[in-house]
Image 1 (cartoon, rainbow, N blue to C red):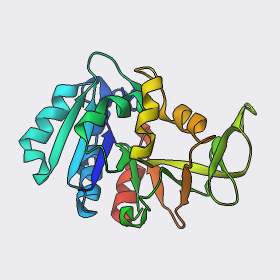
Image 2 (cartoon, helix red, strand yellow):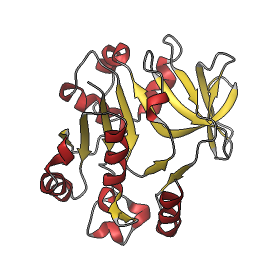
Image 3 (cartoon, helix red, strand yellow):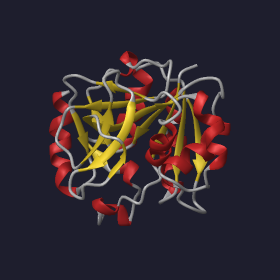
Image 4 (spheres, one colour):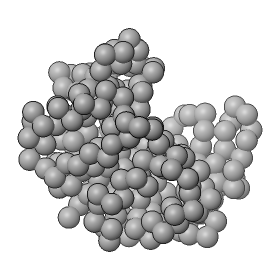
Length: 232
């Protein structure tokens, strides 16, 4: 069974005032909520089990999924209403909802792209990356193994430098890494985990060539997002 997790628990502060009354996941783009677009992309790629984490206006997301009969999928809720756990803590809390022997595709709810999900290798932990301009870059060696991270604005480096590629917000969490989560707190960023784990464990980058990707994180991107969706 192909399984995935959608990060939908964020506060969506950059989309205020829309997110004063609704979760970011239900902000409409091209007539449908962001969550719908991601679920449909996963469903068309053959994903059958999807875990959605919730925090901000959690009941609205749960009601939306129920009203649509979970779109014919095995959709489960990871409830973070008591505490927002960030990306790493969110995965750690959600793990019991998954088949522990299968990899988990992680997808941010506010990411739209033309990425072919079925082209992603699933034999090892993997981060989908591409050549595009950003302020923070993951660093890879000649074999596309993750070796570090760099913030161009501050000059901060974690790990070591290599080939800089931009992270897409889409990655594959592999069951080989699950035991390592036991040493981490309830709340932490998943990228901190990857950057520490990559010193001793293989975490690869998957360079998506000709990737068209849009982060729908701000009000001024909503109109652009509709055009983007129509074009892909």
